[in-house]
Length: 416
Ligand SMILES: Nc1ncnc2c1ncn2[C@@H]1O[C@H](COP(=O)(O)OP(=O)(O)O)[C@@H](O)[C@H]1O
Ligand SMILES: O=C(OP(=O)(O)O)[C@H](O)COP(=O)(O)O
Image 1 (cartoon, rainbow, N blue to C red):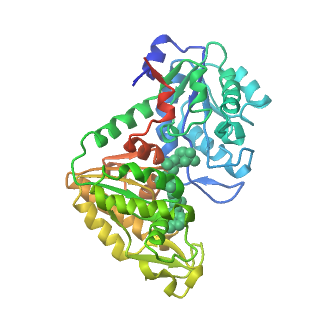
Image 2 (image 1 turned 135 degrees about the vertical axis):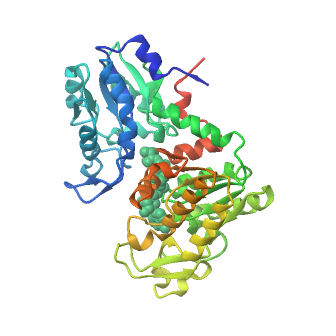
Image 3 (image 1 turned 90 degrees about the vertical axis):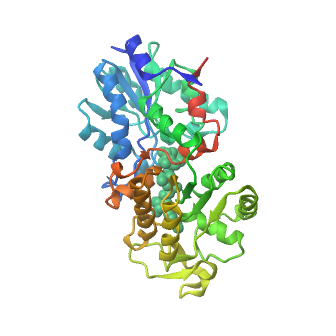
């Protein structure tokens, strides 16, 4: 597919034009409203270069972004305010946050926006039409967004982490304004292309995290592509259940158990080995100070917490086994923490996998970490970006790209 780039837009000239930019400012937060703080500013930093280029060229920039998964209405805990505070600190141009997304506040702020200034709209997911399955609803919201840019407006998609979403601010708006690909999206695709075009083998994919149903859906096409898939994080329990084990009160997608059983069978047939945990750190409750113990993965309910126990990390034997698998790899893609790394007691598995990637990279393998929380985890555990081949801002987006799926955010930008 051919795309018009940000540089093409700059060559056309943007001075005095209002340019609508989709950024991924979906940062991890900690604390409670009103003192939420950003725990990893990677996505904000990654969004800066495009905003800088546009403001330096004299554009008035309107940023659309989401944070978390609010249910189509404003909710204080999903406000973009903490992300915008970080952006303001890092930016050398003025940054304001609109009080709403396409309401009167956003409209008057957009109309008053001057050359070289940035206005961030409130969370696009505060409007249910953003994520609606109904095309007409999404289009009506996209039209309101496009109207903020006006007749001379243009659209730049720089939100790599959201290119797999068929949402109004990612997909539909691209049909209403001249559309361009941002530098972050472009740079991410260069790395991913390298990963998919004949990856050096063994090619090992490590999957974890909590967006279990999203990720179970992508495993299918990795079977036959990856040599090994190491399964950690919240996904583990649907796999263990598929093997007939009980998993206490851990995250479980009951209606996917059969599907996962099918994956295990297909993996055995098509040459993709699933490597599953042999031990799990089981906790009495979801809390930083929860009592916990290491229990065999096939007997999770045999411990002190019985059927109420929560699997919150892979165990140490599994961490060592995953590390050994990663050490044999020539290409590694990792998305999703192995456990609830935000709590020290359940960060061991994520630390073991991160350390193994660092060592594999040092030994000449290509290692790629994808995903907002995965990136936050490796940085939070003290690793640096330079120790990996690439830290991608998009987890689900990278996975869907690896799968060979069409990404709506890219299709919408394609030109003949
Ligand atoms: N066993 C588990 N149970 C519950 N949550 C988990 C488990 N393992 C990992 N997580 C959570 O997964 C979250 C990250 O998941 P996800 O958003 O899918 O990753 P990414 O943003 O890297 O794509 C983290 O907040 C982590 O606490
Ligand atoms: O955090 C994101 O994706 P990721 O967790 O897969 O990296 C993106 O901002 C997309 O968010 P979404 O998965 O709620 O659509």
